Image 1 (cartoon, rainbow, N blue to C red):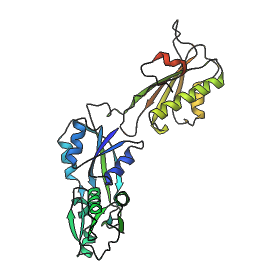
Image 2 (cartoon, rainbow, N blue to C red):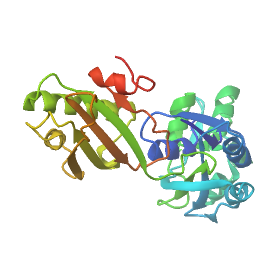
Image 3 (cartoon, helix red, strand yellow):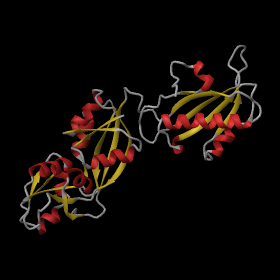
Image 4 (cartoon, one colour):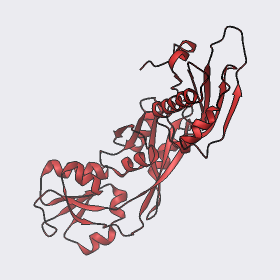
Length: 308
């Protein structure tokens, strides 16, 4: 999963990505909002995050303008990111020795009170908070500072001279997650298939095979239990000793609707086979196409089966 964002490493947009996508994704830094949106439109990224509103300044016009330029995109999620601006400088710098503090224009506006009380420090515009931190770190100039997050300080080896210099303590920005309607990522509900087999009609074997199958479906699709809407199990007519749903309950899937049914007894079909259809609704858009076939059930779908 490739997610574009405006700015450099250490930008607040990276926090938005981490809050929306809890599983690992590839974050792609882009210089402008228009560039981040265009990356999705042209297929160079699967999604992007764009800031659209800030508690201090209101609507982020540049973000909305970038989205308006591509009506084929869809907003599929959002998150609020706490914005706690820090004054960052190279090691050895002092507050009295600073002459400039650079950041994104929106961030500078959020720190008006700081500049009013530190008039010897002049604001300077940069394309991004993370980019400002990187530029200050690369310069090594003890008279230059950046306004960015503590995460940016850690990334670029800068010192935090002051923390929380924004005008409002509750400063936060709303980011939206955006995908192309030409992709399938905008779909809210997905279904994942799986199948496995047992050697005998034995409750322990059915429970073990069910746990293995569900565990592999969750792992290979980076699922959380909260994202699972329901599960339909089917078993062949030679399996009567236990319900697969019982094993799912014992795994902790107590809030997930589960249903067991019998497979159609077609002549010549696989014996002692257990199938599952897992309906999921991801909290963040991502590809979910890893169907899981284990044990002898690999023969049912050798084209998608993964052999361990």
